[in-house]
Image (cartoon, rainbow, N blue to C red; front, top):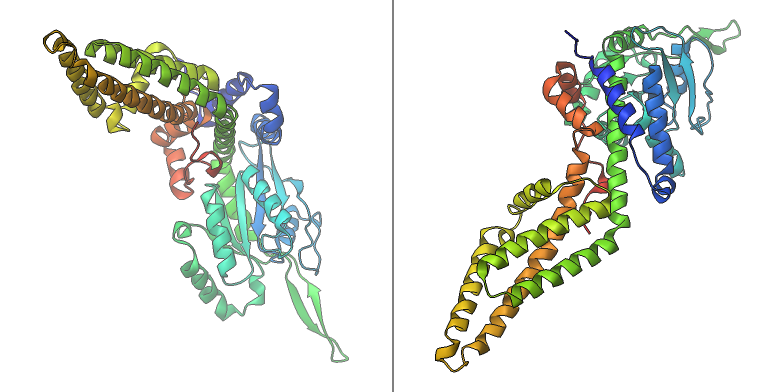
Length: 438
């Protein structure tokens, strides 16, 4: 009996096949080039088993010193000047981790540079590509740090809180400091680990001439090392796999949003042509049941045409099921539409039947009735088109072969994934793809 692959293996297999089947036009490759390159790097790291750990935090809290202490050597630049890290830097951590081929340590610029919005964007990009984050503080939590932490939590990344330079606080004040930080944390961060370290401690020495000199002391980061080793050994491969799924899901959202934007004008034209066709058919046809049957056929054809326009695959049965789901979004697409069409159709038929008995006078009101039916047909067709586009985007994001679909299945079925998402829950879809319609 063949055993079920573990979660990291399933993620690798799905992403490998999904990426190889990804069919992008030259325009899409150009527009989404940076996102595609980032996705390919993430998938490559997944295939190689290289997890990325990034530090994040305010300028001057000792992020570079902390990474140097983990490495055991001075690799990342440290300086007394405010904000010495100007670009992304990374180095391989030589610490062996079971289940991983390696761990990359990534230094980021500070998040609070007054004149450095580009550095903030760089830090955010690095954090989004990381599989595990260390959010570093060097004292009580400030309002700016709390806001930044809340933003980081919204990315849904595994995160540890590190209080650096704990040696600068008297022994009796350290526990109250940590308790104060916990009280100030955003509600979503209440369960996060809080680890106190001293990445580059210094000890004051009184010289014979009365001067005071501070001497560098060995780093005191054992609590962080132990926590990282335990976390990465038990969950490192899972973090890498699930973050790769989320990277694939983000790219899929951006791709389908770009396709919606790219084809908006053409979609308007398609919807307009179908609206005109349906209006003409409803106005000219005297039979109510044929009106309804023709409307359903027209809407089904519209959905399939939109699918081809957006580069999605759907058959007739799926289109009809989609239309059935759409009926719940608008009363005009459900019972109200049928009721109004039946009423107008019956009225028009009654006027036509009465024509011989009224010397044709009853045909005069039949024209406005037909126009009312045509107007209703145009309105419902346009509404169907807009709702169909939104549903098609949603269906494309949740397709069985999509990264997001596997992530949702794992969230329902895999205990480790459930625990990960409960502690570091992502907050909905990427804002870049919200609110799109043709």
